[in-house]
Image 1 (cartoon, rainbow, N blue to C red):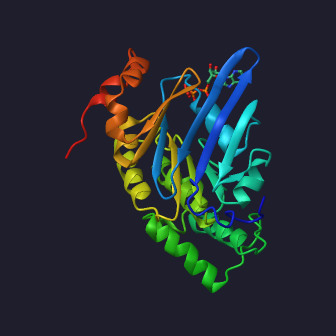
Image 2: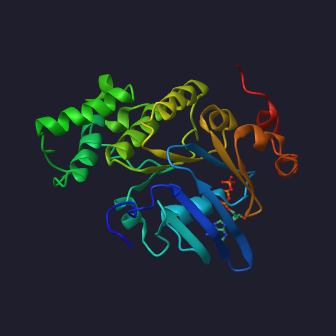
Amino acid sequence: MTAGGPVTGAAAAPALSVEGLSRHFGSLKAVEDVTFEVRAGTRHALIGPNGAGKSTLFALIAGALPATAGTVRLHGDDVTALPEHARAHRGLVRTFQHSSLFLSATARENVLMAVQRRHGVQARPWGAVTRRRGLLEEADEILRQFHLLDRASAGAGALSHGERRQLEVAVALATSPSVLLLDEPAAGMSPADTQAFQEVVLALPREVTVLLVEHDLDLVFGVAERVSVLHLGEHLITGDPAEVRASEAVQRAYLGAEDTSDLFVEEAP
Ligand SMILES: Nc1ncnc2c1ncn2[C@@H]1O[C@H](COP(=O)(O)OP(=O)(O)OP(=O)(O)O)[C@@H](O)[C@H]1O
């Protein structure tokens, strides 16, 4: 395994792949023999009805939960044995469903701390944050991309729910990930916040591959170029949105689920 990045010669490898990945809880097969790939540079969504195994699979990919069987590869490199922080160090970075921000620090300080970590500068959230001009400018540029520059001096705890979710992605992006895992970002968001968040995801740089686990199918079909569907722990299909919508197996899996109608409504032109 090569430390610090993709394996040389593996340029054609998918950004992320899972092969035969399983996680059992006693006799419950929460994730069972799942195999799919996330191509480099794509916005890829993972969906499925309640209890399908999405959160468990996400935790296996991030390294928060050990697999019962199978392999996780990052840029072709087997990272299955690595803990979450080591995967993050290699560029596989997740945002959390529950806020991971320093709520007593400002929006700018939150991004600055992530920028500092990337540059190997010691960050001290409880004290004065080093204000090196270049790092500060970098942090402000990220805040600008996320339409948060005018909120830079606000405490993260004073931001609206939607702004906080955007700040979480800004903080993750500041660590320069190659694969960004977004864990149900629209949870608890208003439709307007979800729309703003969709624009943020669409504006992310192409060097960053995005894997999104999300219940809000408007957001999923608004951003995803590829979609993987889980059902009862098993992988049903990975394809482009039209293929997934047309899949009878997917239609059967969603039958009776409240969000079925959304799944099959054609996208607005
Ligand atoms: N720590 C655990 N111990 C035992 N069973 C678990 C555990 N975590 C998840 N499960 C079970 O695994 C199955 C898949 O759960 P998971 O949360 O991964 O599904 P999900 O698709 O994310 O569901 P939802 O959409 O409702 O969040 C469920 O039956 C759940 O009860």
